[in-house]
Length: 149
Image 1 (cartoon, rainbow, N blue to C red):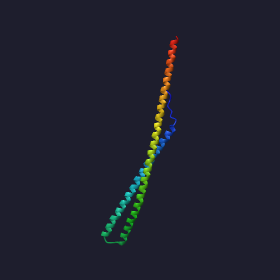
Image 2 (cartoon, rainbow, N blue to C red):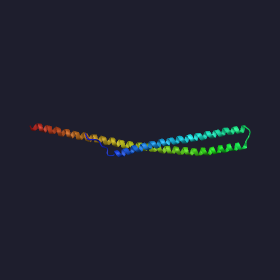
Image 3 (spheres, rainbow, N blue to C red):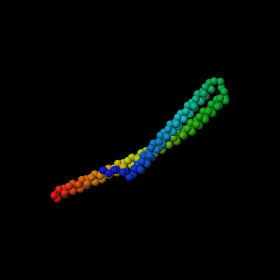
Image 4 (tube, rainbow, N blue to C red):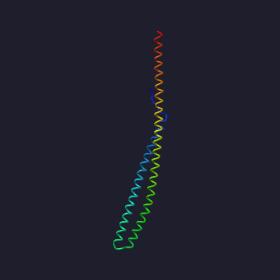
């Protein structure tokens, strides 16, 4: 039996590499989104701390300077939170892009694998025909040889 050689194996290998790269990009995008969400949670916690301190400052002896500093800190935290929410949205968009690339790479690889399977089936059919032809030739040669004697 002859050896099966898929002529587009290099393309299949490239598709597998592209899929692995897409998997890595997806993992990186998921990690980035996780990190941005973690930063957002941290900023929200800091803001809550400033708000608790503001309540405490209003209950204690009034210090206008401390109250104003705390109010400014809360406003600054609001700005940081808005900015961080934008980063989270960008990370989500990057994740979606990475998911789409991954999906596309998987589809392309599967297409190439299906083409390889089809080529292998054609190869097996050809081998079967060749083998059948050889058996027929051998049988007719043997039959012809016996009837000549």
